Length: 249
Ligand SMILES: [Zn+2]
Image (cartoon, rainbow, N blue to C red; front, side, top):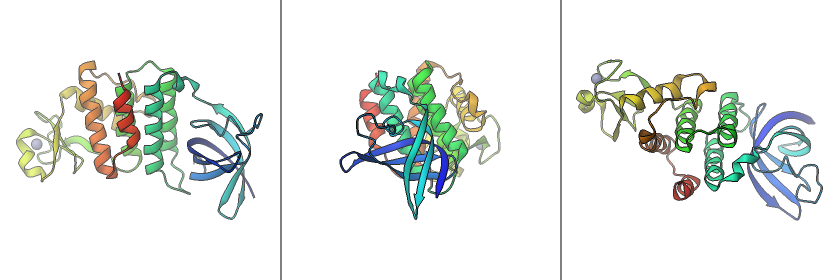
């Protein structure tokens, strides 16, 4: 049976002499494992679509639960990612997180768009990398069903809490004065600008994700917070994040 999908390569592992086993996030079928036969041979038409981060229109051949790439036309290769090690490192981290939250057989078009838009931002836009990282991390949690409740203090309901805190474990906002009633666990302080940025990223238009006005000196703290939130929700760390943090300027 043949199947036409659009998909982006999140991971590739060399197999046998010239094949590669790909983990692909697709529009039709969520996460899929696809074999690209002969793609490492010279002049193979599958060489480009089997590259990491390649986004292609593909025709797959399905036999039982196995999928093989028959042909593919590359829509974007995001080649600009490779101009700086920190961009490539961040893209690898985004791919790992996306793979961790995507589900086989379950399409999630917003997650696919988020990943592609984030690669595009790293490839073509001149945005601060820490902003791209924070926006991806927080929005990815929203698209994966772990949205924090940021509209008001979870205890007293104040829409603009004084000295707002994000309760990392509970994923809720509270005022400093309501902290004791918000339950045990860690909290992180948010500046008013960080709260506005978090709301923009979590609830705003996906197309304007990276147009978020946050003072440069607060970006690092904000990205630490979004990474902390993601790590808590997924209950795991990512080596690719540690690597990015070790090479970022
Ligand atoms: Zn409160």
